[in-house]
Amino acid sequence: MSVPTIAADAVLVQSVEMPKESIKIEGYDFNKGVDHNALLGSFLSSGFQATNFGLAVEEINKMRSWRLSDEEIKEDEDDELKDPEVRKNIKTTIFLGYTSNMGSCGVRETIRYLAEHKMIDCIVATAGGVEEDLIKCLAPTYLGSHNSLFPDVSNGFELDGKSLRRTGLNRIGNMVVPNDNYCKFEEWITPILDRMVEEQKKTGEVWTPSRMIRRFGLEIKDPSSIAYWCARNDIPIFSPALTDGSIGDMIFFHSFRQEGLVLDLVQDIRAINLLGMKAKRAGAIILGGGVVKHHIMNACLMRNGADHAVFINTGSDYDGSDSGARPDEAISWGKLRPSCRPVKIFAEASIVFPLVVAQTFARDGPRRD
Image (tube, rainbow, N blue to C red):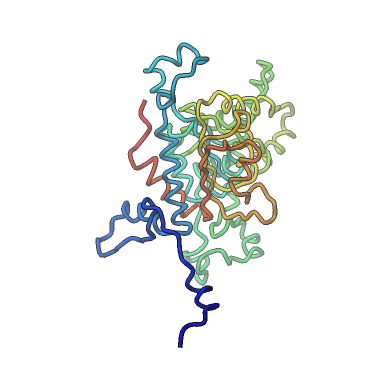
């Protein structure tokens, strides 16, 4: 008795032949021992978000390796840019964006490494991303579990808010920040704000968020800090919502002591947009979403889009948010170029980003001139 035709036709559909260059799905073979580089390298052929990880590594390595000398000389280019030696030294302008939780967790040290070795050209961070970096120079943040204060807590995410409030501890996910840290921050930042107001009155030049952050980086004098290295390596840190955090609280408190401090957002929007416009090639690496993502993408819009982009976040696009939007949406706005091959890793950045850096920036060390 033969198989019914209707069933056979439905189940045994003929396939087209896959192209020879197609990647076969295959994971890492631990029979070869533990080779972390090979393990991470195998992610590209593993499927799902592991493949997106591998694609992100490829995209970042492309943005790092590009030189203007890779492109044909255009007739309308400046004479200086026609010099082969000059072209070899013009690289991709790399924008890095991250939300405050990245400064709170251990990703801070990964970002500090990038700033220390001039591997990025511009940072956009939230207020928390700036202040948490500075506060850690004054006092530590702690894991909410594995201590005698909370002996029955398994990971810290389940810590009771009411109990923490009574004991002066603030929870960030599964981490706790003693409120004393913010008191120390006020003690540190207040005399700096005093001097900034006096300098503003003396020179007539108002501050911008990026200049304020640079000043904090020069004042902190601690090489564990992101702001410390950005100030010394002339990497601007833009924070268009700088007052939305503890820094804003301190500026508010300080305004009762001494009025007159001015932060000019217009100068900063000009600065970051001009940075995008002058970039011969632009790349964006964005951890999280919200204002940091949009601010970088909007700066790239001024040059008709970024050439490379990697996004790492857990956001979904069903609610129409910019944070969760898929990269193709940015192409529709002109924030990514149609030729861009953007990658979004749907993952939590504290796990993924250090591994991405291990396979890219840290793999062969700093960019060399």
